[in-house]
Image (cartoon, rainbow, N blue to C red):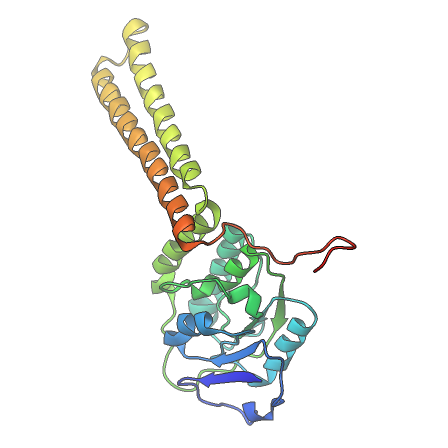
Length: 277
């Protein structure tokens, strides 16, 4: 059986979700949601999750077919978008290029809300804020196999979109957060320690220039004191960053110990010949 949820979603074509087969695999979940319910239903998903907005429901079977072929995530791609170029499509192309480069997950359309997920790819993913736009990247970092499927995009007939250039700042902050969590969640000391060492080196360079000028050519006497103050300031900041990395490392270790979670995921176990499964 499968679960079907619908929230504030108007049918725009004759296609009806009741035409879908009644009997589906038990690990499938369909969710057709409005913008405000995306994170909630991504967490509730029992199996493959479908979020849907201004798309054609007739495309859903194509996504399910990809899941049946062995993919863990089937992401929709609105190749022929019914949106203005400069205000919607061009910023989207730019944003998708940046997100693909930063996350390492190369998709043409992260913003398409028509996607299918396998249960195992969503089970332990927790979404906060507006992180749903990076859900394929989260799944990929957990070992999911991702593909992209061309889907139809229906023109907007009522209301207006809440997305535009004004959301760029939020997307950039969420992207930085996502990159930090994905790359340094289990080793925060690498991040803070690297920044601390960078500040140490910059401070040493600043102080070295001041001492070199004092003992050597004596060309910038007015800059020596400011350079020494800058060196001291950078050294203090570097020390704080190193200490912050150590504290973050302790917090992460406590988190895994208390929650009994593992910093890795076992996708499949194999038994040796002659051993019980």
